[in-house]
Length: 68
Image (cartoon, rainbow, N blue to C red):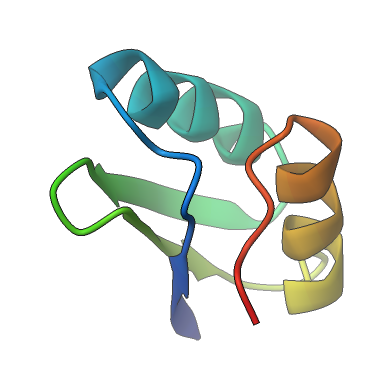
C-alpha cells in the first residue's frame, strides 16, 4: 500500500490539518491521513481506486495544494 508525504505550504494551524484529514480521508481507497503543522506536511496511505493524481487534485480543490 503506497504512502506519500506532500509538502503543503498553506498549513498554518490544527484546523488546516483537520480539514485535510476530513476531506482527503473521504476519498475511496484512502486508508489514513496524518498532518503536521510544524512540518507543513500531509502523509497519506492509500490503495486503489485512490491515486496520487486524485489526491493532489483534491488538495488543490480545498486550497491546500501540494508543493512541487
